[in-house]
Length: 631
Image (cartoon, rainbow, N blue to C red; front, side, top):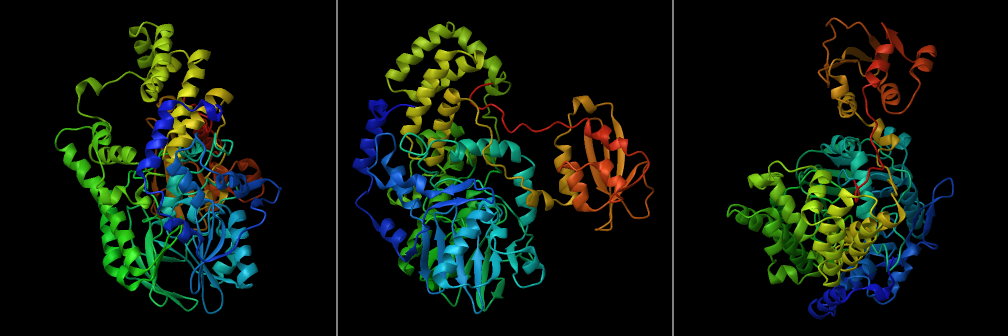
């Protein structure tokens, strides 16, 4: 990596402009982030049962220093705020654990115990957060858990705060929005391998921490690498105004599907005059399409639900808190905060669609759009996690898809074939590299990255191109206000220099796989069928799921695996497996030995069990180490 002195004049100018134009004299966020501080976790490292460190906030201690030349000063400010860790009192009976994972864990005290909201990513970090709370507030039992939405940083640590036994016994209800399990499982399993690999770039988990590497992801510092878990909800919220009383605490829910997550909800505590906005209003512009990949979110709906929250709850609230960042106190301040957040998403939506209807492409709109001064001058609307640029392109994608309408772009070559043709047209790799060095020296890093990408995809082993592209990515990263953009650029540089890091964290944990329905399980299997190899296959298997009194059929024909429930009186196929759903998941996704399970009597088979092995022979294995910055 470069040293501090390797920052180019172009990047320095970007930083100087930010220092000159942004309201750094406004330190209200620092006062809010410190308010209610009770105690920090000391030391700030959390380990798993094997002693491996899964979270280390002490490794971000460098953020206490002055902003270095290698980090955008606005991002440095945001990271300093996110690095404030420990237990904080939000208001009477409401506490938050912040800085012990990407997200916050909120604890609301009830009559007999404490309700936990969003228990982080890993059971180890959640357990450490609960222990910190209990050290200062007493050994209160967990009498309820609320998952605000279906992203793993809001449910993965649940077994660090409660047990399946307590949930099954009714001592700890688990509350979630309708569709929670379906969406949680689909996101982490269907395209989970690809998303996890790209998340390595987005969160920079493999980057060295410091001014030359990872400084945070805008939404939080980074992701923990402990054990993700899941306990199925016992109470589903399916409409706004639904009210539950948990351990004496009244909670009114606002359902917000299609916003930051496909299954999400805000909630209001009428007796505490407190409003939780989940991840729908935080101290950053959020993503409409994350760089790791996801379904495109709807900013029009998002803006509408923020309006509904303002109208229903703002005037009755004294404090607003969320699943990330720090709270906002005071009715007037929190109303303004919500209003600007609402205007941010609504403006991006309406103005992007307006320009779409005038014939502009997503890239063109992203280059020209500007936010109104009142929105642009607020710290909490800055693009530390999402960005105006990639959110505008997401809106374009939502409405118009990948094709921009120009027939010249309708049938492009693959990246490798296109790169070879570009390099040839531009005079060969030697000439492209000469011009790229000039472009780099001129500070036009975006163009240098694009042309160097052609050389790398045409000649992946070109050492000069790899080195210059790594330097280019590094300068782009140093200049980024957006945390995830910085991580993407610096991870690209890191892998070009050090090699592929693979996927540091995996989200398809046993608990998540175990939550698959039979239909979702076979959906996941169908996505692995190598279609061309299976064109001539004809395999029909029936599955008698004994613990669910369900019979399901799978049929592989024409390279497609279809599956559906059978009527109980329908004729069975030649091969029928009789087994439980957990054993089915274990055999198909968990590596369990079918022959041993048949011998043990756990699985009974009518017909030829080798037909399953024949089906399995047509399945591909996903690759968690696929290349990103090279072919």
